[in-house]
Image 1 (cartoon, rainbow, N blue to C red):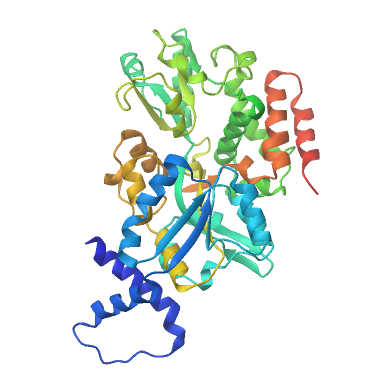
Image 2: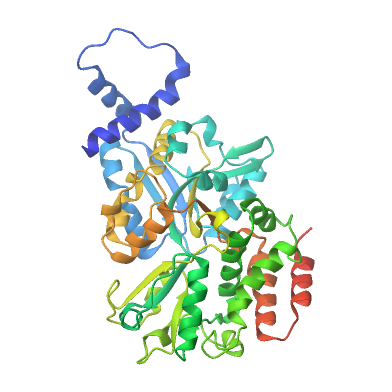
Length: 443
């Protein structure tokens, strides 16, 4: 069955590539479809598609394994070169006029820099774009649409992704206490009040991370931006068109600090947030008895949990509800977007493949990857956490990438982290922090 599906996919790609080269003979025999498939592969067998990105070590192995069946079927050799210094190395290669055929960007902001210079191929012009669009919800397409010197282009397709809008809890103790997973913001507020009435702190929060201290605070603000204002305002904020010192951003920060600064809401209180490591913060949920009950973080956080805990038994998570129900079910995400720099038939074929769930199926089954594609199947997920994260993303009405990762480095990984840390610690007022971030934005 997999071979039939792949053959149909490849035929579609080759047709898109060759349709402008003249009409086909109308006479066809019963063997024509099979012959056409062979002809499609014959054109690309033995070719090489070069690819660069940040996958190294185990991730690189999982990527290679996930595309192996495609390589065997088509005869295309996808040669992936991963680097821990990816951002610097890819800039040198592209600016030097020697880019790989495909580049895997973990941050779409970096891709956007190349798009602005006209260095990225518009996928609208080289792929069966209707098939691409049918396999993603609109938000993924919006985030892949970027401004080039010739106008907006489809700059890439999304591969492996991760979800961040998750609230973790100690399932055994949570169930034993008779608490109920909240479906709405009002129910979350009720849960918080119930936990405090029982004499405990609802939340475990820490944002200390060495030189990167503060990034966990920016994640919370991004979550609240998606839950209190429009996607258009979120996009303007990320692009620097909506100031930090604006009513919309202030509202989002207040939604966060209504939790963070309230007496009894956070274990250790406000003063502990900036000195508690983000990785250590959730551990108090698993003490006996728990010292806190809820922790918001992406699915990677389970690697910081105590050893020998079983997902779905010892711990679980729920989706962080929207503050404003009219905004639907937004999900904050991270992930990899694949862009095309050289145009050849085999490169087009690989890019079309990356727009399907089949391209990450092997990785999903091996663990550690979530598919954003509509044609992916929840049965592929072999662990409880990955499957539930995939469900959260599939059920999202909108998704947006981590905002600080999209902002200029001086802001997203600089003043935003630093000034929010200063505000949370109490060393600066909100007015001072917001003014400093706005002042740091590059001209």
